Image 1 (cartoon, rainbow, N blue to C red):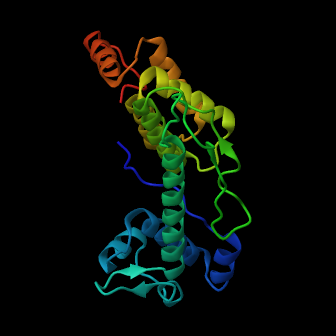
Image 2: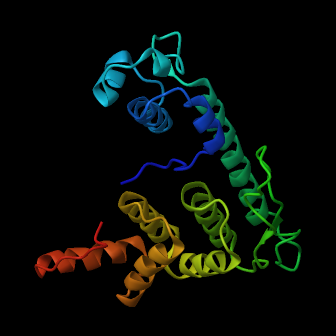
Image 3: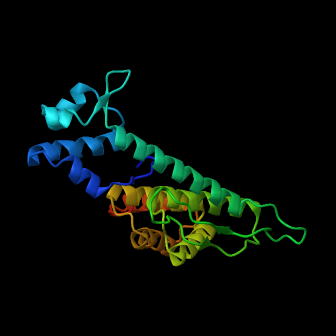
Length: 234
């Protein structure tokens, strides 16, 4: 299964083109490949770099620094990774605050459930007036919804539509957070991180009677016993 990791980072095309202006196409390929590897795997040893892209030219080598362990990294990519991680953490904290507010005496969740947009140094807001209706369900349900919403913002889409969030909330209430998290992992593994794809997975399982992760496993065990294959049997 996919790791719980934000799959995105800001990539400034104008900066890349400017920085690669004196590189030939082979060198540009090496450069972008190493940037992607740093995002996915962190700092790289000389051996890892050689296996990934071969021998570096002086032009490409000059774009990378050496850390205290002798591993290579690009300073700008390092900064963007940290910015993205900090932004994602703020989003998780805001989602948790929204759904974990103490209830009033009448049982209603207190406070405004709106998350204000967060900037990250660019002109775009990752979340624009993301709001959900006030919850009257149990604290456990609110916590489950908060967990799934946070994972969706962090792993799938940092700027979702209100409709997708409303639909996702419904699936959490019907199937539980674990089923939704499994659908996220399948989408990440298949590199199809759209809400329509995730919704299709959840809708398919719901139609099969799945209401919790144990139901999902039971359905797949039965299918395997019947010798059937299921695209979403992961």
